[in-house]
Image (spheres, rainbow, N blue to C red):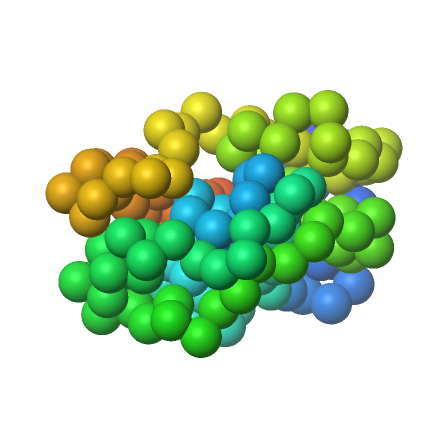
Length: 154
């Protein structure tokens, strides 16, 4: 009897023991891109994925234009606040998606790392944030399809 190995079955991650994948979104200020990504993933995965976000140098508050852009999608981010990036957050996540934090993001073997090149919404109005939001949504939908391949996504 022979078994074929596919990329989906070669790595053992904390998610395999909890049956719930976990994702950490990191950007410098944790005020725009990472907050929108976390909000979309929380909303679209309907709790099937554990979601975290953090920043290497967190801002005092979430970008109001990002909050407004997400409200247009029916997602309320108004109660969110930027959080500091910790080693524990990285260690407790299966997938770490950076959005401009560069070398400030700790690296741990066995984690899946992605760097999403996205425009920074800092200082921009909602009109300029909408295209960034829409790109994040498309990436989140693809991520959900990868992490939950047997389940349907919105």
